[in-house]
Every structure is written in C-alpha cells, then in structure tokens.
Length: 168
Image (tube, rainbow, N blue to C red; front, side, top):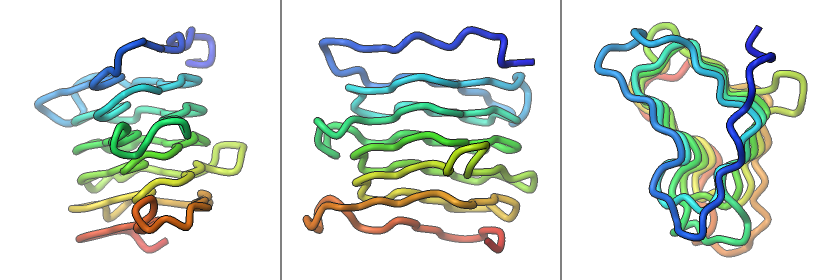
C-alpha cells in the first residue's frame, strides 16, 4: 500500500518559490497514481500543487499557504486541470487567493472531502473552492470554510462554480 512510501520533506526557502509541485501530461490518465501526503507548501507565489491530466491521485494531510503571508503573495493551493479519479482529503488551505481550483474533472470526477478527519479546511481564502467546465461527477462533501476576517478584500466566496457540477 502507498502508506509505506516516504513523504516528501517539508520544503522551505529563504526565497519565494513559484510552484511547489507540478505534474503535467499531454494525455489524461497516462501516468500513474501520485500520492502527495503530509507536506507543507509555504512561501510559494503561484500554485503550490498543479496537476494536469492526472488520474487517481491522492492529496492528503497537506498544508497549503501560511497565515503570516498575504493572499497576493500566495496565489493558489491546488490546481487540478483535466484530472479525474482524484481524492483531496483532510488538507488545510490557509490565506490563499484561491484555496483550490478544479478545471474539468471529466466524466470520472473526483472527491474533495474527509478521509477520517473533518475534510479540507479553507481559512481566510478569497475563494475557497472554484470549479468550472465539466465536473459532472465531482463530489464535494463535508469541508470547512472559515473566514474570520472582516476585510472584504480577504474573502469573496466559499464556493464558485461555473458549468456542470454534480448534485451535492
């Protein structure tokens, strides 16, 4: 089982990184499952995780962003583009402009919610979760959206969807 594999170490830098993890493919579903677990993505100005055309990947117990930095310095926690069969489980998204974005999870969809915990926690994200294009089988269940800031520039919407999204 994948639980026996080592996790990536915490990545910290004195300089701001542009992207923490990228996996791109030109055809959906060609490369194997990825397990991104128990990582901390901080000081990253663009996408902490950007997965394009992946299948059956698991993203669990990761920390994206940091409350000490501004949303303008931390663009997005996760961007899943043309991915399907993924699971986003029990992660924390802190003070990001976009907590998580899903663009076209195709007919197979994916799951964003709890494994054993409380689901994903989005704290002070301008847009916690954004989904657009074909997400007819994307399931979003039991996540927490916590926006304690009274500043309207810090918070726009917990969810933003465009096009097709499965009944929740």
